[in-house]
Amino acid sequence: MPSYSFGPGGLVEEPRRVPRRAPVTIGGPPPSPPRSTVRARTPLTDETVAERAGVDADTPQGDAAVRLLALQRHQSAEHARLLRELAPLWVAPEDGESAPDDREEADLVVAVALRTTTVRAGTLLRDAHLAVDELPRLFARLEAGDLPVEWHQRILRSVRELTPAQRFELDTRVAAWDLASIPVQRFRRELRLLIAWLHQAGQNAPRPEDLRDVALEGSPVDDGTATLRITGPVPEILSLARRLDASARAVQDQQRRALADGAPIPFDPDGAAALSGSPLTLAALRYAILTGSVLETGGIEVPTERFRLNVTVPVMTLMGFSDAPGVVDGTVPVPASMARMIAAREPFWYRVLTDPVTGTFIPAAASSYRPPTAMLEHLRMENPVCAVPGCTRASTSRAEADHIQEYDHTDPASGGPTCVSNLHLLCFTHHRLKTRGMIDPVRGPDGTTRWNIGTERDDRSRSPGKNRPRATASIPANRDLATPTLASALLDAWEQHHWEQEIKALMRNGAFDEPDQLDHEDYLRRTAPPPF
Image 1 (cartoon, one colour):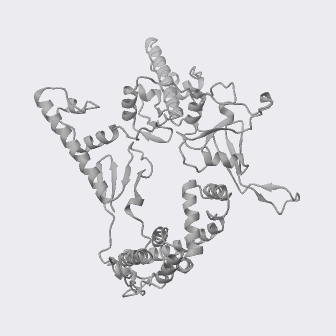
Image 2: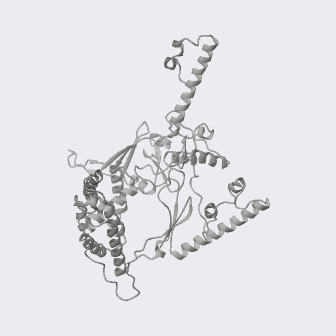
Image 3: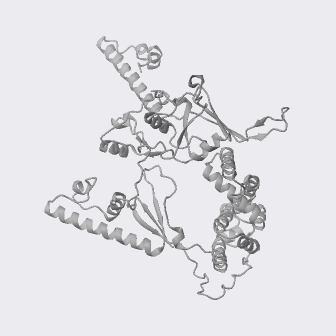
């Protein structure tokens, strides 16, 4: 079943490779298993690695091949150490009602310790459990350095849909292969054959209908583009692609006729066809048709988004005096030219005030327990994603405003005010963890938030009931990174202006040749700072 990506280049088919030797049966008993012994023709050793790479042993390339082989084995052993440390932190989904929160807490601890995201931490914990607890024979080969990390990760991805019995079968068979010597092509081919056989033998292969999905592929990249992936059964995806292509060709023909007749050009949202005098490309038309289509939901009313889509553009960029990038929803940078184009199309602009030097957002006023809409928008400027360290869940839709110091409903004046300095946005999951006391943020006077994550009993403490956090992290206040740069540029321009004014004064007084009066460094020491 292929996947299709809608990206800057249009609709791209990415067919999933199917092994040519994969057994296929219709009815009857399952096919016979693939070979259980996979051996290399020659062992891969320090003496043979150069020959297999096609270089002479007594050359710099040959010496490098030997070192790289040793490095691969060392990396495998180190990766095994990481998985062994992570495996005890795994929380199984069926471990009771508190399992989801405990699992999120474990993800957060690992994310802080490894300086990664909570999503990546969760993946590492799941892989560690699979490797250590369910594939112990292959894990031993990884520890020994025989199994490259890349190969091991491919195996873990392949077994996620298998049953425990099938994983045991795979672990037994693959661990018996000559993993230290077989080439990568042989490994991948044999692994695909084995996975295909296990699926057919167990009759648990996922149906194409069960894999329908529309998802953002990865994260938006820094060039201002993103990719949407659509996956589904081949007939449905091919039908969609052909209908989209036929629509684009029909519009292109109409644009070509309109240009020839001097008539208004249809479906030209940006005016690009009128400007160039040529019809839009099929790729551009497919994209415009897809993104401009009305989404049909069968009469179900879709609620409006809680927040507007913010594109933050530095004022100097808007004026054309800087090429500092804009930022979409506080996370994705876009080129200055795109930011100016987006701003030009919008009928309304919203001003965001920041300190001219530090870039700190100037807080909005507060008057009640529930933050007003303007304050929520302000908070989202500071927290485009959940404020918990390592969490990448966007705060666009379901984020919840949380009081760092709890609001006192009986005596609001006693503490916990509803103000920007005492609020942040948390995703639903981490807001629940904070409510349960599993994470505890404390904000300092400089805006830095110290996160105490989880609790564990301190057996070394003299107080038997005293607990300590399992992990801590200090996160500084979010800053508008462009503002300090622009403020520095303005400061330089201000100083240059006064320097030029003094030069002109010296020229008028006939004292231009006096070097002590032209000392720029001395002038800067005597000049007062600019009034901003």
